Image (cartoon, rainbow, N blue to C red; front, side, top):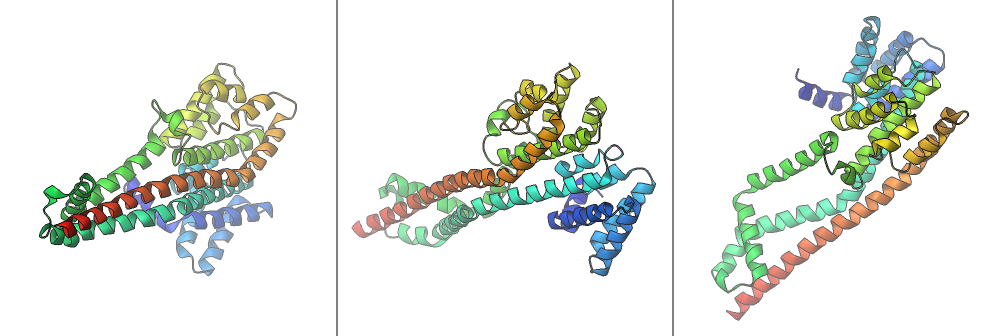
Length: 349
């Protein structure tokens, strides 16, 4: 099975809600002092008894991978990069902490996706209504009006409306392909683009959402490393980068290079200049770095920041919602004005 096909299958079989449920279940069993092998067996059996056979099969695969000494790679294969990077700390960080951290990251991702979905719902409905209006006008309204009033006598807005609607009606598949290509390009740029302008793009959705998500996963993993006494050396950073997206690898690699030159974690984030993992976190990490018990202080601050991030996401989503609504309303108003213009020209004729 190809990588893309497997990813699609994994998303269908082991979606976000399923992952959170699995992570929490295994973490609770580990908290009850079950060994990891037993925890995976018990969780798999419990899911099978609940009729969730697909979820149970995933855990069985993880159980086999554990005995074959490839647990981190097997788990990461089924997860998004933001969650997979956490499990590459396996062997150096307690498994219970890894599963609990993965659940927190998955829940944060769910809140972000939900915020984005709510922000774009109404504008997308308006945009869909506009497309249907243009398509119907190009096939029915415009040809009828042209028999009464020639397009040469129409105003500029009316002629633009006519051109858009007629072309959309004649080439709906081409329009859909162009729209899909735009969406795919934005999605690809979000996870892969690291060139000039990316730091500026990280200030606006969906790029800002993705930076917050990947940055949170990176910080959670780092905190678990520090809590377990793991040195943040090149080996640790390579483990973090292994399952990460191209964007996350680039940002983590920039921090890694400055740490290799002797800078601390916070100073390295500042020198990297990317505002990663989040602009509001970088100066705090830099200020705490090196102080007595800074790992615990940073962990407490990150926990509070994650709790506050919901409000931040809602604020960003509200701004995005407002912009999209204004754009959709402006386009709709232009179309309505063009329709009235055409009707006026026909009546005058």
